[in-house]
Each structure stands twice: as structure tokens, then as C-alpha cells.
Image (cartoon, rainbow, N blue to C red):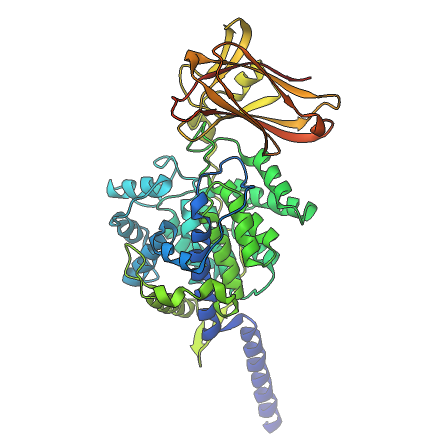
Length: 534
């Protein structure tokens, strides 16, 4: 009997030890000190990134920035406190502090609806919907929000990764509550991708590819957004030292003009801008300066994209490991409040710590002796939302692709004003068929593009133009986005323009032809006749 009791006791103790061992393996440890260091890095990285690229925001669209970039200086941080991709996040943080970590869709939506700051695109439409009584998630659905796939939640989702270290399920739950206010489908997945990278960055210090893959694992494999980022990774492996090759590949495959600005080179769509974040991170290879520069050079939303990339990278590195230049000016502005919020740098970090510790406790984690024991969660995709399959019927380009092919099947229109004067016309100005284009707005060129092999015996690209109503214009030609020719065209009759392209003959290249107004003249409508290689 005694032996039986002893054996039973030993078995019970063994079972308890096995259970304890199994349970301990289900948790990750993170010191409070390291969490705070990475949290500070995440926020400072966003501040650095947005001020690094703000000068170039939507100034280079459909073309990369190949000119020298303006030097970033430590005092540039002063401009971060008025940036929407920072203070909108803080609206979300205030809402969570007010209503708790189990905040409802309606509570989140109403808090956002009470905001006073100016908004654009998906944010603006989502807020207006809530004010009209259309609550999330419907406020971000394409049925009510024509900007559902735009970048808005992508640039505001950083917070949800920062307050959920390694807790991907909680990241997605909070992300859905707030992201559904303004976005849906790919627009929502964009936020999960960014936030997922932050969540993983608290446990990954120096492996960029692992962080990118963790973010990618947070979105459905069948989504177009994920396919776009996977294309970035595929091209990166083929061209690991040439970001421009990957930029060109993504440009030709994913710049389809099916967005909320049809006919305009501006692309606020989440996919293409998310690709630029991934390009910057991968090709930056852990170097902050390099990451900032490459992400900015990709163009389009050239301040928000480096803000996301730098925030993720600096979260990985931690505040303490950043070079002094990046943080030397911070003490001078640490009491400044981010506009439209109650947070300064000094109070922001404490707020994140409070919320994060509540989330850790909610998920079954513990906090003892300044050590977070965080339940192990693997990044997994949420239930799949349908893609916006009818998007192309809503955002029709000014000139349909099949119509352009009637004029010249080797070229496509990338930028053009929609009007009765633009399009494909037969028997016009003594030509059987012509393309008539005009810049969509001031400062944005009309553009046509050729992508393919230039015949090996070609010497010139021969073009002919006719300016309608005698409006003069400037003609610019680029090869692989580098300008090779620029001339003012002032004749009000058919003008033949030959451009030497002999050095590129026999290989695949991109040629763009741009029409720009001459300073102090009205926007011209220009007729293009024959265009061919000779």
C-alpha cells in the first residue's frame, strides 16, 4: 500500500512537471525594458520616415525618384507632430484608453467621427459614413466607400502591432475594429501586413526577411495584396542588389490604373504602396539610411511609405541601438503634443505600455518582475474577405485599353484627362486614326508608355504631334524612367519628332512619352498620329 502511494505520488509530480514544461514552452518572454526600447524605436522610426520623405509626397508618380534626395537633419523631427499618419493612430490609442481593449466597432467608429482634423480618401469617406449613421464595418465596405482599397489603414495600422508584441490574433481583432471604419479587403489586409511586421519585430532583432514573411502570413494567400508582396520577394531573390529592377517589375504588373484616381498617375492604392514598403525593407538590408532612401525613391506616397518601413526597422533595432543623429533632437521636442491629440513623446510611450500590458494579461500572459510572459501565437491569415471584383467597372480609365490598341497595340495610356476631346478618333486632322490626350491636371503630365523589346535595327523613335487650339506644350521622353529628350513644341500643325534610341535597340526597355503644359499656358490637348521605331 505504501509503495502504491509512493508510486502514485511520483506519477502525479511527473505529470505536473510535464504540464509545467509544456506550458512554459507556450510562452515567449520579453522584458519590459526591451518592450519600451522597441516601442520607442517604432514611434521614432515613423517620425523619422515621414519627415524624410514628406517633400516628395505624390510628386513622383509612375516614375521613381532618381535625382539626389534632400538631406535629413535632426531638427526635421519638429515637423512630425503635424503628420496625419501619426496623429490618426493616436486617435485610435485614445479610443482604446477610453473604452478599453474590448472596444466595439461602434465605439471606435464614433470616436473617429468626432475627430476634427482634415482627412482624405478612405479616411474621409469612412468618417462621413459614420457621421451619417453607416457604422463599421459597413463604413469601409466598397458598397459605401469607393476608397476601400486605398492606403489609409496601411499608414495608421502601426499602432496595432506596437501594442500587440507577438500577439497576432489580438492585432487582427483590434485592426479589424478600427480598419473597417475606412477600409475593406486589400485595404484591410494592408494594415494587417504592416502591423504583423511590428508584432514580430519585438522578437526578431535583425532578420528583415523573417519579419516581412511574418507580416505576409497575417493575410490570406489568395488576396491580391499578398500576391503583390510575394512578387516583390520573388524579384528581390532574382535581383538582390538592384531595387530598381524590382520597382520596374512591380510597376508593369500592378500599376493598372484601376484606383480612385483613374487617368491620373497618382496611385493611392494600398497594394502598390505596400510593395514600396517591402522593397525598402528588403533592399535596405537593415541599414536605416538606405531603407529610407530606397522607400522614398519608389515614389507615390513617399512620406507614409518610409514612415512605415522605418518604424518597423527601428522597432527591430530598438531605440537604444539607433545612431545618435536620429535621436539627438528628440529631447528638445519631447514635450510637444502631436496635433489633435493629448499625447506628447513623453506620454505616448507610457500609454502604449499601459495598453500593451492589459492585452498581455487578457490573453493569459503574465507580468512578473518586469518580465512579460506572452502566450505564443503564430501569424495566420484571418477569414478571407472577397476581392473587389467590380472595381474595374467603377474606375474606368479615360481611354479604354482596347480602344488604345486600335491606334497602336504596343503602347498604353498611363495618364490622361477624361473629356470629350480625349480618346481615339478616326479620320482626324488628315490621319486615319489618332490618339488625343491631355494632362489630367496642373503639374501632372499626360503619359503614354511602351514596354518591350526595341527592334535591334532601330535608330529612332519617330513621333508626330498636332497641338489642338494652338496650345504649346513640352515633350519629354524617358527610357527606363531616365529623361533622354525634352523639347518645347510650338507649331500648330503636324510636327515630326525623331528621338535617338539606338543605344537601347535590341533589348527590353520602358519608354515613356510625356506631354506637359508650358509654364503660364493652359492645359493642352495634343493629337498623336503615327509612332514607330525606325
